[in-house]
Length: 77
Image (cartoon, rainbow, N blue to C red; front, side, top):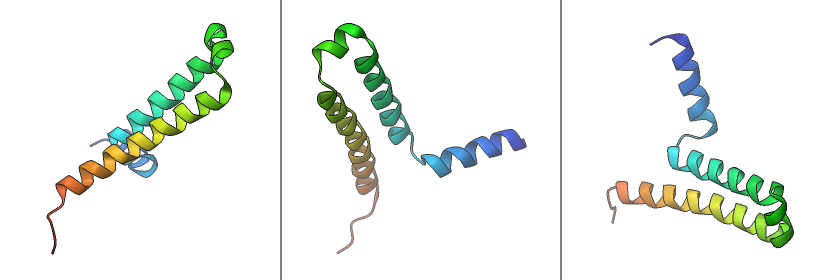
């Protein structure tokens, strides 16, 4: 494996560690940018609603990851 691929994987694992979290963050930032920068949407939707949607998407990504992790573990009694 070449050093560039190793560096990319190490950076990914350090910052994210999980593809669901990465996708959730990308979608949250993309949608927030869209809602704040498109004039028709920016006037129709208050910034507080945009912030709430942003936080909800981040939390949803974390919850999906946590649910997947819990399903994958063996049950201990």
